[in-house]
Figure 1 (cartoon, rainbow, N blue to C red):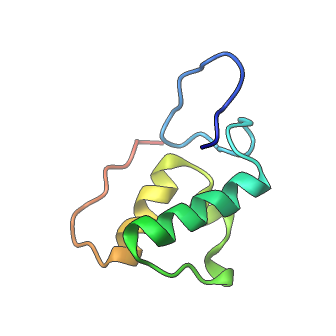
Figure 2: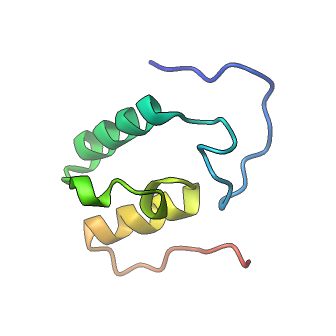
Figure 3: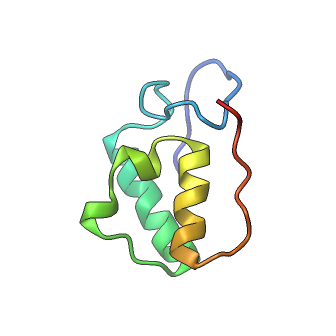
Length: 78
């Protein structure tokens, strides 16, 4: 299990996980492995981009797309 060290801060849906220091490149690989194992999806190399993985809202949209979900994914207004 991996733990985040430091002071807890609120995590906004659109906050960059990398820029906020929440996750690093190794953490992204762990996240991808977790999603593939838990949700039985395959994430291709070309899908491993910030547009898909660098915030909670992007992760939710990407995972919904991978799962073929027709449910709307809530988006925080910009």
